[in-house]
Image 1 (cartoon, rainbow over the protein chains, first blue to last red):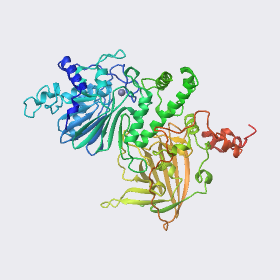
Image 2 (cartoon, rainbow over the protein chains, first blue to last red; image 1 turned 60 degrees about the vertical axis):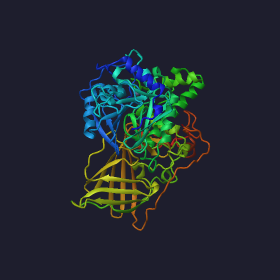
Image 3 (cartoon, helix red, strand yellow; image 1 turned 180 degrees about the vertical axis):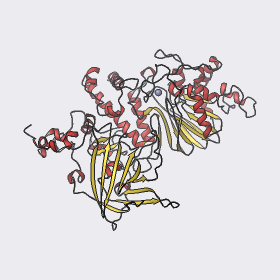
Length: 357
Length: 261
Ligand SMILES: [Zn+2]
């Protein structure tokens, strides 16, 4: 892995400073948000679910890329000689099970945890999995992740952690109390962040680009592009079971979601007959390709266009709901409750478009 | 056990439901399809210009719709050790679509695996009938005028050979978009002198300057030719809008009671 000079951004320095102020990583496992709708991407504020019966299932995707499905956001695993890289970590109580599955695939140390965004169903296991690994540090790498390099001759000493990398806004939001939820546990916080449009890495013989998708599902969304494997891990800007969940408390927006979906379509290249080729690991739901994302993009666009038209004609929210702008997609994506509910989606799109009017 | 051999090149016979197959269905010609309200709304929102988008230009028909179209080559994949049929392959001429019907009873992929236009198919012989169950289909259409078939649909097909003729019956179950199973039969004739031609396809820009992210669709209530088809053929509008009742013989009178209603 190469950490080039520009990775020591102000953002990273800030992140490390924060980590230092917070001191030793908390080992308390906070109750992570559960989801009212089992398939919906999480948004804040529910009770602790029961994880005892959750099984972590592994789907080999391509070459050295795997998708792990348990409860919470899908996990992407990239393994190789350099170590293990994980995109998103589900809930903290699942970390042992996740680690068991990772160890069946690779014994190499966990070096990187990337977060597509800050929600607890994607970051809850950050602390546990980070502590199970260690970054190669030194050079211009500072702070807790550098413990590994302090004259230890390679072996990861006690206190070493893997890098937790996310967009700067993820760190900011995870430290805030939002919607009555406490801030995220200290040990789950990103210890390296980026603030640019995208961030490049090279790991396990593969170039990896992290794209920031502004104000989409949240204000800290990242989609991760594994360029050699031709796999995108996109987090909650795309899911296969529900209408988009847009977290207004974290400054998500319908236009951001649409932009992100169109960006995914720009990056994906089908192999043949408009399918296969670039594979897309959604935040929740099944493995996809361009055709699936196109279907979802169409759906979101069509509903957006309808509500925009209704807002333009001066309809109230109640009138918009009564006009059933999602009727043709409800049997597939609709749900009656939770953050991904049909009503909530209509409300958010309506309010966004009304504000933009 | 002796099994029927379906190998060979089969040419589709289009005499049944010809106008709906070639040239193809009209806009808002939904009769005979057990659509629910959601599917009807999808149909009415469907603007054919969506086919100009690059993501759509080279899509093949899905396996359930493909039984209605295109010559096909069928061949068996034999396990060299056991000499048992491991799979039956089908190559369609149009859009060069290929599928495999696995005969070895392998496990289906998990629910979270990727779906495809042809889906994942397992087959078994029920007497002389090849019965095929397909899952993992990509979202597509039951009729190529915008009526949707979702990616949670499953299908059952029967391949029935009578000498040099074959009937394929396709039954679609779609909990999202159909109120009951949708059944279609299609006939094929053996034509081993026919070649299955290649079918390259490369998406191009069809409409210059189309805005990024533009998705053609009709706004609710703004379909430009909603009952053009029904009125041309003197059908009732209820018939044109489809639904399970329109598939049954008793409906015929209502269907024809057009302008008076
Ligand atoms: Zn989320």
